Image (cartoon, rainbow, N blue to C red; front, side):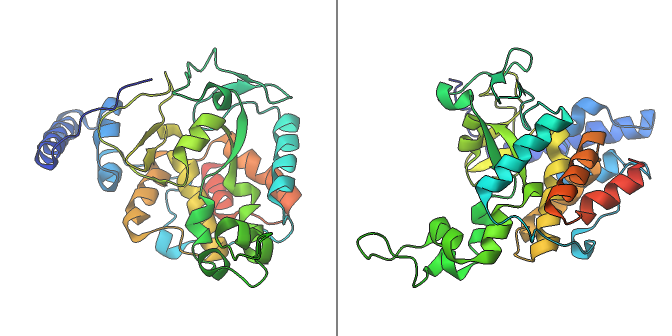
Amino acid sequence: MAKRRKKTSPMKSIITTLLILLVAGGFMIFKGSTPEFLRQYIPPELQAIFYPTPTGTGGGSIAINNLPATDGNTSITSFSTAKTQLKKLYVQAGSFTTFYCGSSFDEEFNLDHSQSGFHYRMNETRANRVEWEHIVPAEAFGQSFAEWRDGHPDCLDSKGEPYAGRRCASKTSPQFKLMQADMYNLVPAIGEVNGDRSNYSYAMLQGELREYGQCNMEIEDQKAEPPDDKFGDIARTYMYMESAYHRGVISGKNVKLFEAWNRMDPVDRWECERARLIEQIQGNRNMIVAQACQEAGL
């Protein structure tokens, strides 16, 4: 198990960031571009300055305060049904790679970490299991439902005691069930990473903590920083869930972060193909991804 890194003082972090920005600015002035190795140290709100996205690369024009209108899931009401459909989709598409860490799996969803370099942190059993991860955690939208917060008259346990939370919302709220089962918001993840990420929000973390071998997934202080090649996928999923359901899943402090991530990591062929395949099953088009794919020519 990797050791937790020591905390960095706020003043030291500010000075370090300023020095990095000075170096990046020097490269921009004298070389005309910023080296890729500095990208991870540039604050998200400044990424567009140091790493401008060329037009036509997919998704760069999307703004969170002006999202394209999109419909949400209206057909799949069961989380278990969504997982079953996604398993079929991935097998039929020949896509056998976990979302965060790039480990492979076979048609029976047996994991193989030999090529990805992933190493479990603590839970070896769960690290060898594929689970379906909500990119936007159920709690992030669940808290907006009264059934989650306050319970419901139908939510009584075997002893007649009331309960609330996800269990109650799943039982009594049709809209929550549709959101929970939305296939656009579900990806195959290594079980231990899914469990460690929990319901934590995404953020940019200081340093480069490595607790999963070569997997560039960092989780600390109830925040998660994914690999940079997943920045855009995550940002566009949040945008889709916000536009489709209007449940406030994007907090004010994450607006600039997700807009920057969307620009930094444009759509690729699999993200576009995956969205088209989900549309065939679920019935609604993800206009956030569709627009980005159109801009990218994918």
